[in-house]
Length: 221
Image (cartoon, helix red, strand yellow):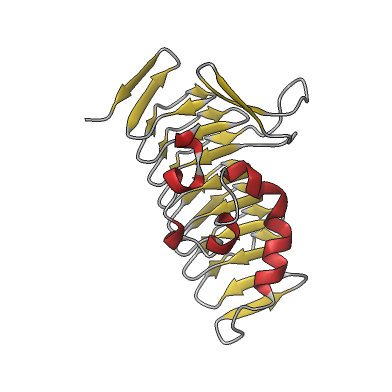
């Protein structure tokens, strides 16, 4: 499971949550601690840069938040982020610098690194998206198994218990997810990989690869 480790998926210089991520080996281990980390970090953010809105929502003064967007705390919206029309942030969300959260996109218990784009009708729950990761229109993370059992990370014959009922997707840096794709619970996509549109993805997709279907994952050239 070496390729699933935080150090192999993410450039930690590209997130305000670096101190949190450095405490763990695998990204799903971070999920239960996002809320408390936001509360701790938010109270330390410089007031000359961030406005505190409502209950435990910190928004950078350069961020653009549409009036129709809804943000429930705890949440941190970083520098130059854009929260567009009817975005729905349900709480426990860190939105990185220059990130776009688009029309009707829903976030819950997530870390979005800098320059992430989830711009059109996306659901991202219990997930971590790396630097410049992009989800095409209608692409979603599925974070609960249909049988409601605990999520297991599977990489070929290797398996790792998460101990969690809710685990979405862990996208490495520069991952591109095609329109209309579903990332099933516990999906891990290595950095610089592409997912074809309308894919149903589960398990581990190696870095620097193209996912065409379950039986056809090729090296990127």
